[in-house]
Length: 26
Image (cartoon, rainbow, N blue to C red; front, side, top):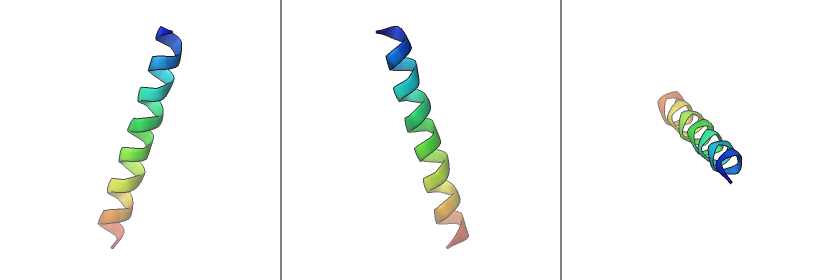
């Protein structure tokens, strides 16, 4: 369970970084 949770958090963090980068590009 903990492993899956950490993976989900990592994915969410990656999405946040990608979103912020896209917003900065525009």
